[in-house]
Image (tube, rainbow, N blue to C red; front, side, top):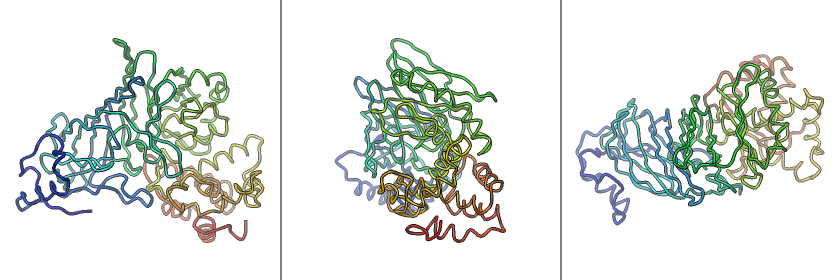
Length: 485
């Protein structure tokens, strides 16, 4: 962390941003030279040094809750927002950062709940640096309120896909993996900082706003419809979503009473009807394999294929580009355990999301008269799983636990070879112990964060008499195709 002793409260300040004519570096110098001694606070880090996105996220605090109040009109493409961010200081703070891409900041206040004082702030790229009126002490719970507006951006991932705020045929769709959530609300946008949410969205009458969690209220007044969604369980910001459009929303329950909320674009209703009706069956099967479901509702959002082009495991209800097939549904719902509840500590640990969800597909096929997991594994190893030889070869491009760059976080080794690691564990310990491991792993890190080292340690502890050295060396971290299947 950068240490710059100062006490902002000792110097005069405006109640908004520094004048544009004052360079940021000069402004910092003026603040430093005006300080008195005996200062305790220092700025929080502007990034958590993620291996692939080092400037993503921020240090010095832990967010516990986001209260987002949004208003969006597709005709003007304008978003107006207020973000109330409740956090706990993890160090003495004189300043801290939030991630926010684009959008105009109108006002920032910082204080205890219900009592906010105007704060100084400055923008540099996607970093919104906030300087509270008074230093924050380690352990303090504080609320930052940011009022902002503008036209939210669509970002291009390192792999070339689009994320962020995607404009659709009749509204918008917010998708956040890995960095897109900072295009529609300010926050600590790294998966290592999870929080509960309340998301309130106002849209023109005739449109619906769908988000994560449970719908607590929906009202229409003066040509505007407002929906309020509540997410009680911790959620990483990259799996937060808002879908705005002409959705048909249906509600049902599973056998054990879990609410199922499904939102479907009318153009996809007929094509997706049958597979979406299988959600209760899929959930029952996944609970039998992975343990108790970690959230208070489930479901899906089905949009037009051209609106996104890929699915995402948004918490509670995954987003699909057009009608999914059953295995696609199995994959994204499995992420609710592996990725949404047990969330990677860094983006290097993506295989703990995708390898598990891919292996869920293999298990589903095995249990529903398809190929066995062993047959799929052997086909991948032999190189005849795909019709395209290049796709078969791509499985061995890099180790699943060491993606070659941010551009390859969603490549085949993270998915298929990650699943192959799990199958090697299963072959080593047997079916009973393997199912204990995958269910126990989800329970041990429920609503938390974990990395690859946590997983290997958990596996070794769960089967102390087994030797996993070759699996870790050759399959998890090894370059190229292992010599033996």
